[in-house]
Image (cartoon, rainbow, N blue to C red; front, side, top):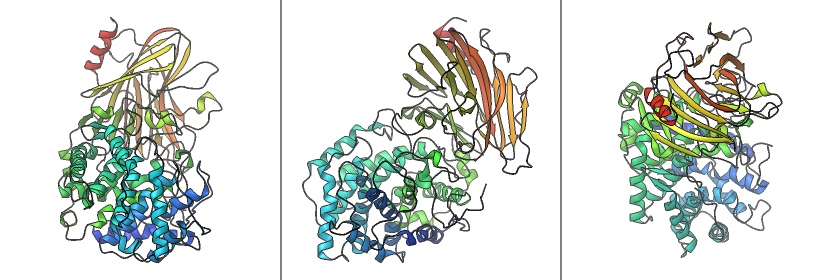
Length: 618
């Protein structure tokens, strides 16, 4: 997968010891030095535009690396660019300086203010005390502006919390109704069982881990924290840790899901925050294994350019993954991963033996229900597959792809959509897509209803006001899952249901293997990365005679739609649906093994069939 342009700074680092992690942090920071402005306050890494202005974009490039620099220094490490950051704090907060960041309103500056507040809260001897008296006054006044504007009602309230923690640490705490408001809003976002929702009820993604819990643990680790509130955040993190560990496979990869995928190893920031807060939510040996395997996973991927700067994308450079707020500096939110460096070598986390991957796998349940998030996780030695009840993300790019698919895999990832110019351009892996003859494809977005019962997920979704789809997903034993749909439509529709997108080998000489079953009801594709299969159940002994039969084929997806591979192929089932009631069912599997066959006997989902039988007699 590694490309010739890859200058991944982690590539040759074994990432086993604390010294290796320190070196990784420095190696990721070093390529940024040439991009600092003369005054040090602005870092602009690329030319792609975002929906906020250039001042905020340059502030983002400056501030996000602080999440690695601060713990590096707190843990006794060195950083040779410290003087540049000190100059940058002086210039950026000075209204009379040409590199002034501008005063915050309800805008992107709020996000980056948290990083600067974090620096003041945990390392004022490096980021506040060396500044001139005038610069300290400017910085306090600049940071305090965050209290005069209301953040969006989501994880941004924690930005105000962390910024004020920094102000208090440098002796500039002020009674703030705004801060009280943010603490109260954070409480409203908590759903119980360790789970927050990010703004909109029902939206549960990595912002729970790399924002809510990570910031809560940063707050709780400060001696200035309110003891009752700190205890509450710690208890929630302990409750969250067990479920969250289930999102990581034996290789260290996490299941990609939701927006902001270009933050990459921020997925494991929560584990670093546990170390910062000295919170043994899982055995330290297990936390260490999860933490280090995750960074080793990213060390193998072409995530940086030849200059060593992280590129926009997930497993490779790919701007189609981006949101309107994704600037070239955005990927450096991944520096939150390095929070663990604040703990010295003597900390039990760093002294613990890393739990081997096979022991972690033996301890993890094969199927785990995370009902509050609308998810069921199933796993084997090579991947974790997350079945999802669907969520809503109406504001950002590719919301249905990032939140609405039926399944997401740590090995196969998921695909995003390019603009359609023809029906065959639609890339809807792990989705049922429907379209009118002359219209675009529509797939599940926000579900009207949803529930989780053990290994089974049910959802109702309305692609049109007069089209109702009920979907049941069943974890049927890896690598399989079963999907059942009841489609009630008042209009004629084309349908396409797809399995997992499989990477095609990069060499032109490598042949993609595809196979269609003799009855035309199953499609399989195979490459050097594994195999992917979708199998219609209409003629496979399913206990419902009225199932609509579908024909199988393989789609070659548009390039750069997958988060994992530049080129993919996707097995699919298709049929036309006339107005009326239709029952559809299929079994789906994908694996790094190649022993999946179109003639396999699919797993049955008796509980799901009973559920559907209760809806309408067979």
